[in-house]
Length: 105
Image 1 (spheres, rainbow, N blue to C red):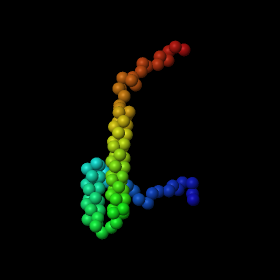
Image 2: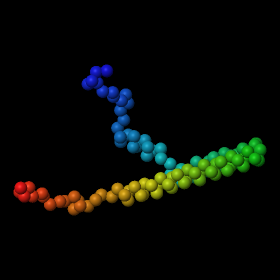
Image 3: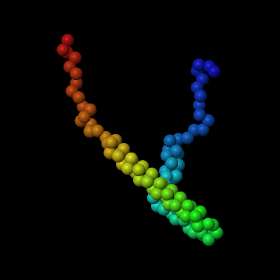
Image 4: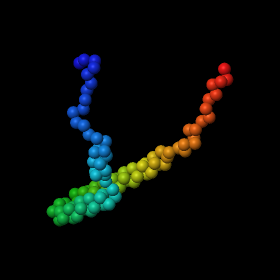
């Protein structure tokens, strides 16, 4: 490899495209509730076809996953709020300083 050669990415994505993809994939509490209510309905549809112990285990698994994802979203929301509070813009007067007098020599 020559000294002036640089490696380049094969795929070029703009940050805007990546941001839009991530926003479209984000989960919120309403989507989680609808997802897990759908899963619970599907489980109730096969309730009489499986053993009671398996049904109960699957039911508690669905409940656990729902609570777990809801807690993650709540934690992320709290983290975003605290990060916004910490990243407030400082007042411009904070950076204004008096000019240094170089004629002291």
